[in-house]
Length: 141
Image (cartoon, rainbow, N blue to C red):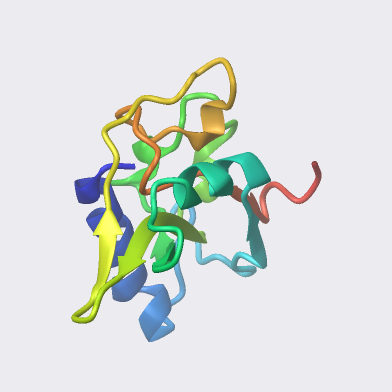
């Protein structure tokens, strides 16, 4: 997920879900059941934490929503992308707490695509991290 993709993801959420407007799925029908949870693997979370300060670092969690315009940010390996349209999800961003703010850390570092395809941003970096397992549609390991 790039900075631009993160903003598009957040805007879709702010436009619909944050204001309790029923989201529409890929077929244009209102979603009856919104996301229940999102799962991220430990290794991906650790990669993000490793980018932060050991004492002042952490993870900022952004709420967002997939729509027809931003659904392509999901990795190619994610099956049935149209099932994610209208679903609320999370983006994890490496972050350091300073005296003035919580400062997001964006990565341009490539991750080993053989190791974990889901931990990659669409442009190959690691932070922000998107593409956790969203339930529904993915509710089984």
